[in-house]
Length: 199
Image (cartoon, rainbow, N blue to C red; front, side):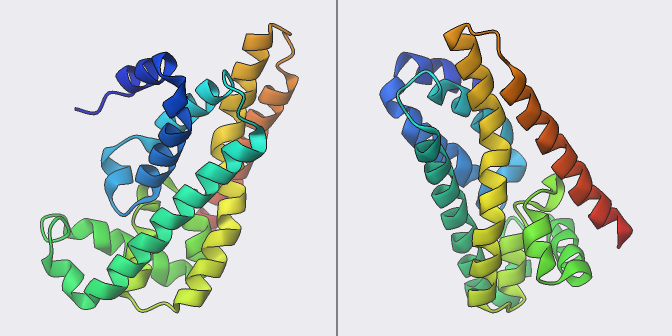
């Protein structure tokens, strides 16, 4: 069983691995179906907080998470492209046909916009890249939309935890920035959910 607590404790004791932990968390949260099984979002938030205890800059944090998540998305897309229509007959999709059905329904409803919106909708987040890849979406279009959506996704899921931890470490008592970022993240996610519900 994957234990976030044990991993974060280990990273606290081994801070030289925090950068790798960020890449790992961003990748597994974004890669194919792993994000359904492993709570990558919570892991990413926790490790982002740990990053505040190191000399890692905000730019480095965002760059690591952004690149890792985009690589995972593009890899998932290419797997879907390679498997194409055979994907339905391959584990774990064969045992869980509702997963692909969910991804295809979302893709049919929103088209290219679904690649952007799907990043922020938990249930379909790990499904969209592999699904649209299997459906034959143009690679250049996918990469373009994915890279743009990643610019929003990376700060949304890392900065609140990072700055909350930073404020606590510095004992400044100034949590205004962290609170503002959390509020902004909530508003953004509600906006995405609203757009999705309108279809």
